[in-house]
Length: 68
Image 1 (cartoon, rainbow, N blue to C red):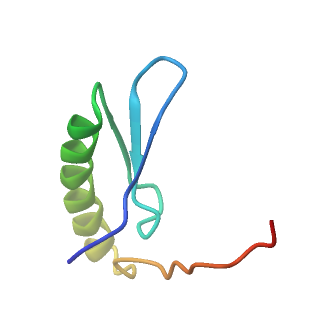
Image 2: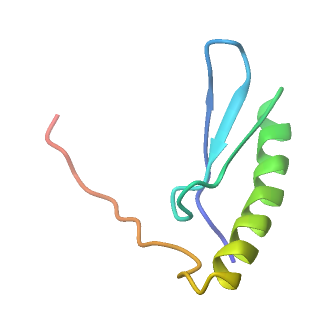
């Protein structure tokens, strides 16, 4: 399964990674690579919990165009 992950550096220099397709699935790391690795683990855990609770594994995300 391939999922989109966003990674942004916060004001403290930590990298915050989030998977928009899985509500609440967030992780962090000292580098972008570490944040991405940690997010892979968080995604696995979030998918397991969602499956146990009978929730949809992912939610729909869409690309929308916004006039500039």
